[in-house]
Length: 333
Image (cartoon, rainbow, N blue to C red; front, side, top):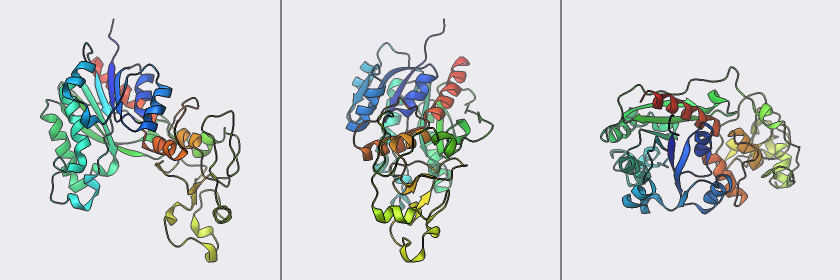
């Protein structure tokens, strides 16, 4: 009988990565995050998981070893926040040496202590080509020093049934010399925004649904509603009459979702991108659907915190596809 594969989730957030790996048949050993509202959401949806609510920098090697005792960890997963590669100040300085990337080094440290068969690290697309690929090679080299065979690819969540164009750099490593597998596209046609969201009851600005968790519409000013009322399905600020058209601030966000296409990338603040036909921003529930979270996944904390949790997550369907690729590699390990 094959042993149940096990995983550790670092920077677990609301739990998108965890949900995908759970669905693929993995068992959680422990997860780590330190933001209270994110942890509240994680506990709500994963009551059987062991969540360590602590800054990973304060998690000692001995504590990691104790938490991992008697467990043969198949994979360590996570998306450490990295700022250095996107900042002008990183010029001339190695990614690894940039103090803003301390959390990446913490991911490497846990991998070094645990020695899992595999690791999966997720990050933003621009990391892949930063400094003409030098940053990517530095990251790979750091894991190779631990004995891992490593590969990196850019994957798009839309290829796995997520109704969203979301490109991410995915690093996968194996402690054994073997081919690194990445999930192939799994659907024929992209899932559109309308296909994802049409199931929800209509809401006006400030209204809510008592039957669906987190389906609460943001209250918008009359001025905002007037401006957005001029914009058609998939349209932008150029449809707003010139005399009231926004000319400063984040004008790029005066747009409507395009109903017959996948969503733009969901982030932690989508308040000025409006529903394709309803005159309001999307609810947390709708944003979560664009990330492929199921309707019974409940987000806790303030609504701003909930939006951040959704926007920071790895889409569960994408995570599950990656998990199944790891399972396939594990069979050949």
